[in-house]
Image (cartoon, rainbow, N blue to C red; front, side, top):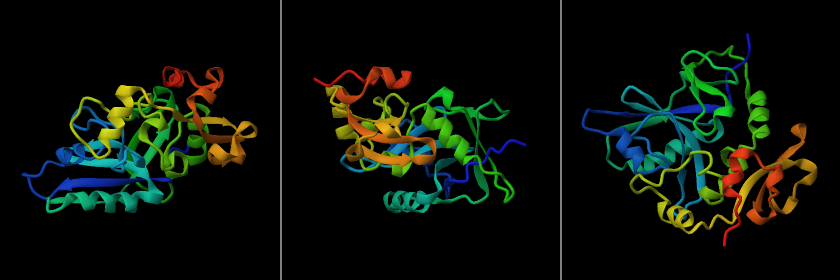
Length: 245
């Protein structure tokens, strides 16, 4: 059987302790995308300055919300969300019983990746110790499409510089959220001067490099838009490559 489990991913569950609590409303005021509509969506929790801290995919499970996030930072994300909870009766914790799965091919019950249909299909299922990992295949496929994710690849940069608009990771029609002011200003003024781009490792600029994957001969650089060759950029990025004025 083809391996599908992404062992580098984890699930954080947000659930109300009583019927008076609105979990979606709580998250809506914190993250970059609209979670009051159809899920899953791609979103992030930003710093007050609009810089990426955690990115994740938001799912629903009845009245609960599930965050499909990096396993390595799941506890940090849960802790950060708990700081904003204050006295609200909402439980925020890792759900060890669920796992994230991915496949290039459609699967029953799976959803298209909300960032880019070409990324394939994801679903959540009970975790089993014997699940074979698909992380290497997922990373190779994702980077072949030029899509970065996670703290090591995104780093501490402004959310729109991660290509969040092109990858459906931000809503400009929802209410306030952390980091919204700088994010909205950059969008309306068209001042996204730098972007993350996946490049061949032998063409990477070490000074602008976020991370390198020697086994794939690829790197992720944080480049000025004017330095990105449109002919080598993925089609989905083309709309964002007009140099800022």
